[in-house]
Length: 64
Image 1 (cartoon, one colour):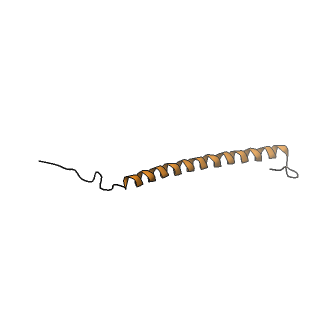
Image 2 (cartoon, helix red, strand yellow):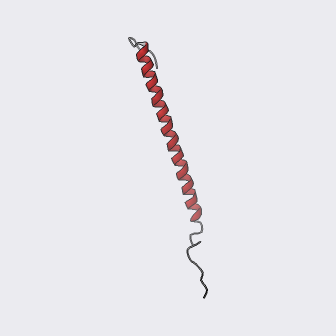
Image 3 (cartoon, helix red, strand yellow):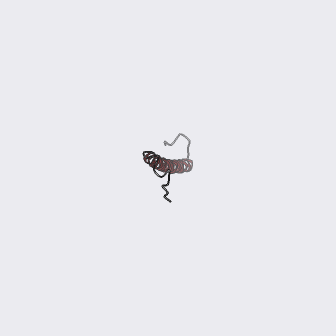
């Protein structure tokens, strides 16, 4: 961020601090989104592994 003509040091400092906060929030949101994608990918992998043997556990053998 460049100091524009007529912009005081105080205003520049406030704008710079707000920009830093926005960047921190965006980074935190991106991190959460990546964590969710990783979790969903793991769940999808588990579901695909379970579908390899779809009949496994589908019935019970009972003898009388």
